[in-house]
Length: 153
Image (cartoon, rainbow, N blue to C red; front, side):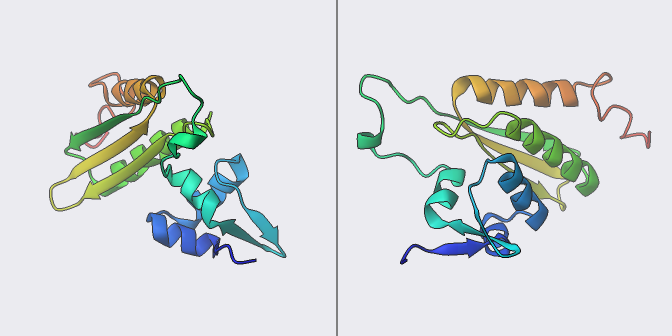
């Protein structure tokens, strides 16, 4: 067997994620893994599928265009704790209904120096719109989930 296999820790390190997040991906079926003893091993092909390495043209059905949207959302005035909560919420929302044929990729970055968070979303138009609607409802001024936090509430 010559295929590269990675541990959960190695995958978490490569993707910049917490080990628990990777285990969650495995539990929900978003990331395929093989259990060997008490540990999981992830094949390179399965890791590539998770991060959305593009399919070759030969793998796509003929006559069906592949549409992918990339969005970058910048949120100012976000401290580390709020950024972590928002990241968890968005990632949990995107994990609810994964489409293996067209995976949605979301990455979050927090800049502590500027109190700024960026969320990068890559995926189909409809599912990307769903994530943007989720963000809009969560961040919507006084009615959003984070309302009142700026004043210590």
